[in-house]
Image (cartoon, rainbow, N blue to C red):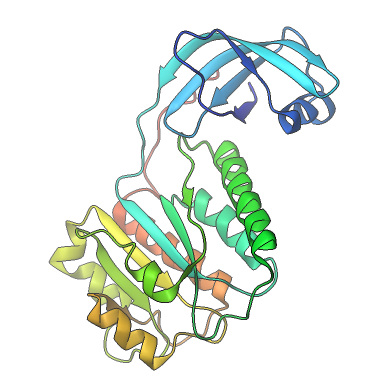
Length: 258
């Protein structure tokens, strides 16, 4: 199988692309590839490029583009996951798995029960790492696009990121009247092309935050009687919605690598 590698967009008419340092290291030391070997590059915007490695020397490398192909995005609906910042490095796991499960955008946010974070410089480094993890996950799972990872926002600002046409849902453990199944069985959800899903931190969403979300047009929903870890809840929610919307269980395009 031809290895599939993420690369920034290639300029139109350009036949040679410089490979990133970490890509060179991966091709040389992990895949043991060299000059003349074939690779498949994708840029995260729906374009794929067949190429041949021309040079891998030290930390630098180039590849010659032999063909370009526009790949239609296969995700039937746009799903944004707004995720309260969890403890430790759990966000890295959530970003990776949310990418594999087809999230179009991930919006980290700070809520009342979010554990305070470190310096602004550390936050910038974490954001860069999340974006790199998303690109690597898209590379591994065969996505033609890479989800957008937004900068961490306050809770109120995160709610405002929802599109006007989106079905907006906040998952709240104290919700006792409306389940996620009821929402998905409603006519609005069945015809929706966009969902904005909010998952709280380890300590949960406060009653004041839930009311704030309702005033912003959000439905509050329960996942059921079980209390899930924050990372489990996010992935369970995405899997449910992607199954209902047709991504999970649908047959994809044929493997083009031969």
